[in-house]
Image 1 (cartoon, rainbow, N blue to C red):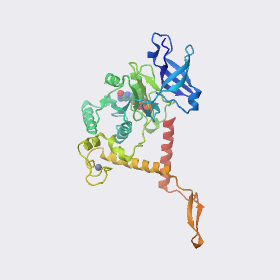
Image 2: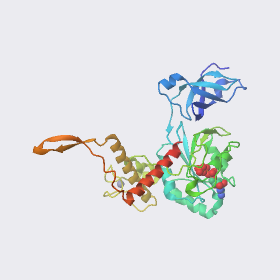
Image 3: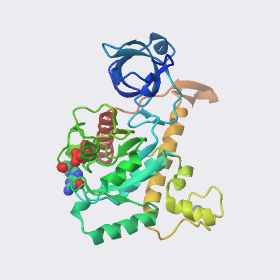
Image 4: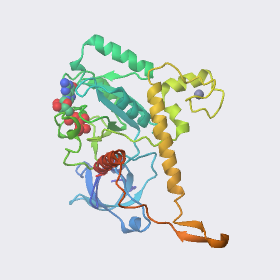
Length: 358
Ligand SMILES: Nc1nc2c(ncn2[C@@H]2O[C@H](COP(=O)(O)OP(=O)(O)OP(=O)(O)O)[C@@H](O)[C@H]2O)c(=O)[nH]1
Ligand SMILES: [Zn+2]
């Protein structure tokens, strides 16, 4: 057996245990050792605050081969870090949507596309449930998306259409499967990885969110090499890019700015004079909506960095100035209907965020 370092990839994290798939290239000639070890994290890593993520390449020590146990001694440098779900070393995003059931919502698809573009990773757009539309509908949808700048791959899990083509795209890559709830992510993973048996649900509108019992992140091994992660029950990616960079996440805008430019270099493409981006193209409205979100996000970040002072300067008699603590906003003032509604929406959003994190 090679005495070199034992390296593996973290497939799943549960409580304080890490499921690590061994990179068996380092153990040539040995066939009877376990492929996956259940590992703990060495205390030294805890002390230096080095956390371990799914997808991490790690060095393993203190192996107990008979019990398939080990300890993670070191985390190798990451090439990328995905936040939702938290996975290291992802190489591409597979954006899966359905052509119907649930209906394809252009705004929602756009939001997922922009989010995926912001990751600077390879992006595959795949449309499932092609069995539910005619070939001419498929062609016109394909043309529409190519205007957006994407070559969509139409698949059907039910009819096993184009699954082989997709499998080739996934080979030897670490891919995160993202897409709205009910589009067939679990069904697709079950088909690609026989034996994995992810739970497939019924499409039941908004209530389908959160029905997954096990929501922890996990990487699944593809039969011909490569790893795949699901993002269950996840409908609304939040856009956290800056207003200035948003334009670059639209292929249509990139194409325009490649051949010409706006009068102002910091143009946000809203109402500035001589803007070459503003105009009559399908997703311009989406751009404007996302721009509003990005501006709100930026203001929010600025406020966080600059907390409101807890004291205020008051002028007393004879012009004497004095600092006084700020009084709390009246608690008994009745919230307007609009504020109540906003609070309710925020509450829903927060509980969704919580679901996505757990
Ligand atoms: N017509 C049709 N239905 C499909 C196809 N693939 C999956 N479905 C159905 O779509 C529904 C949702 O599938 P899931 O695999 O649970 O979808 P999901 O994307 O994992 O959903 P979440 O777990 O909520 O994110 C199920 O009823 C599947 O049987 C397909 O190719 N054609
Ligand atoms: Zn412009």
